[in-house]
Structures are given as structure tokens and as C-alpha cells.
Length: 391
Image 1 (tube, rainbow, N blue to C red):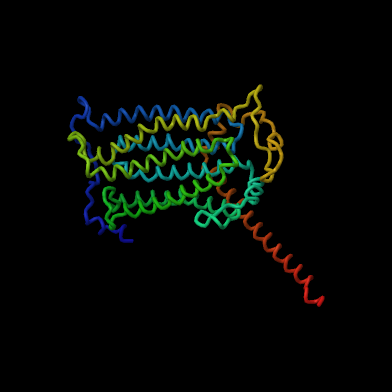
Image 2: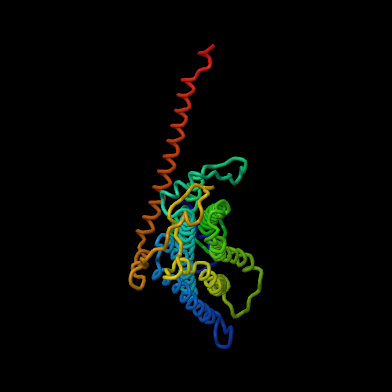
């Protein structure tokens, strides 16, 4: 590939290989670099306190591991994003190497959000298959035609899963191309890798976000009691605001005059990253409310209802018939250590992905076999009953 060749670097990237802070005083005796570290550091400490505290409460009050482990993965987006951003502020040379991995964190959180919505509608694999098999979903671009629920789930699952996979690959390629001087963050020239990786990442993001929005729009009526709109809003604000700010800073960087005390590094890396760090504080408060532990807490006086099994859409059964009583204990272990161990174990995440793949693949295969069997039965019926024989 041309973009990986050393020759591409001969075109000259405006960003030097080694970045140094040489700005003058911004506030008092503080340069913008040091001011940024103070402000962003305070915001990072606040965000870590709020989000890690929420995750710890879920770990200690884990009455529904399937849902709450996914919630912990969703909540992890904010502190991880915040820490990577703060490191990039303190060590500007690490910015390009870390930036791509924030997209990976978004991909993992988006996948966890999709599977959490599925758990809201049906708590186990068997009930998920029954639930989606009973649905007919309008096609996005051809609303007059419908798609079977299993096919819709499969399309959504693959569309969302590709996001963390693609962004992981582009993040690694970004590190490699930067190390051989052909990435060039400040350039959109085709002989640098930056523009191509941005196009790939943006396309992957668009596919995943569109899939999750279509899934929510079609499924929201089946999970209103879980307040999915609030959870979606809390998640989408994080991703949407960051994306919008990247576009705005890209447009404004060359058109807006900044104070002379701010260096090139402050404008292109420091200021955008500081904005992200500051805005994560109110967003973490929203996440704290949207994913609170109240629905999962076991109380001796108030019974928290949990899904027992799926019943066909349109069933006349009342709510009590669809639900079974409360769990009688938490599953997170002492101080939630067992829950943290499961959350931090990447094999658990890969196992969940594999189980989802097996569930969708087997359900799709069984559905195809059923259609073929129905076609054979129809053929046998038509063969036995031939109107021409009675003439």
C-alpha cells in the first residue's frame, strides 16, 4: 500500500514527530498546557468518582448479572475515554497513538447496549429466539416489505459488531502508520493514512449507529418499562457530542484566531481534548441517573419483578403472569469482587459474543429448515389433491 511507504512521508507532514510545549502565560503564570492539565485533571477525578462509584454499586448489588455486566461495560466508556484524554493532554506525543482506541471503547459500549436492549425484551437465548421469530419488521428503505424478526436481529447484530472490530483494526493501523511517519493527523492529503482511516471509521460508525437507532425505533414498544430512550440518550450524547466537536474543531482550526499564548499543539489537541474532559462531568451525571442500581436492588419490603419467560406477542396474560418474583441474593461476591472479575475478564465478553452468534445462527438455520419443510408439505398436498384426476 502506498500510504505505508516511506516515500509518502517525503511529501511533508506539518506536525513534527516530537511535540514540545513552548507557549507563554495564559492565566497568570500558567501556560495553557498547565491550565489544561489542572482543569482536565479535576474533571477526570470527578468523572472517575461518579462512574466508578456507579459501577461498584452494580457490582455489589448484582441481582441480574446478564444485564448489569452489560451496564458496567456501557458505563466504562466514560472513565476510559476520560483517562485516555487526560493522558493525551499531559503527554501530547501520545495523543495520536491513543486517539484511535477511544473509538474501540465506543464500539464495545455500543455492542453491550444492543445486547442489553435484547435482554430487556427476553432474558435468555431461548426466549429471544421465540420473541424475534414471532416478529415481522418493516424494511428501512422499503417499508411496504417486511423482514422476519430473526433476520432483523441478525442484520442488526452484525452491523453493530463490525464497529469495535473495524475500529480496533484502524487503531492499530493508526499506531503503525504514525510510527513510520505516514499518518499525519493534520492532513487530508490522499498520500497520508489519516484521511483513509477517518473515512473507514466514519463509515463503520454510521452503519453501527444507524443499526442501533433502527433497532430502538422498532423495538421500543416492547420495553417501555425500562426507559430505553433515557438510556439511549445518555449513551448517544457521549458519542454524538464528541463527533460533532471533532467536525467543528476541524472547520474552525484554520479560521479562528486564538490567543498568542496558545501553541499549535494547544489548538489542535489540547483545547478539543479539554472540552471532552469538561463535558464528561455532566454526561456522567446523566449516566448515573439513566443506569442507576435501583431496579436491581433486593429489598425485604419491596419486591423487584424479574422476567421469567417470554409469552407470544399479543398475549392476554397480565404482567404478573409474565414475571416471577425477586432474586433472593446478590451474585457479585464480597464487595462485588466476583462481578469485577467477570467484567474485567475479556474471555467473558468473547464468550458472550460467541453465544449470541450461535443463538442467531441456529435460529436462522432452524427457520430456514421450517420454511423448506412447509414448502415440501405444500407440494405433497398439491400432489395428493389434483383436480384434473376427478374430471
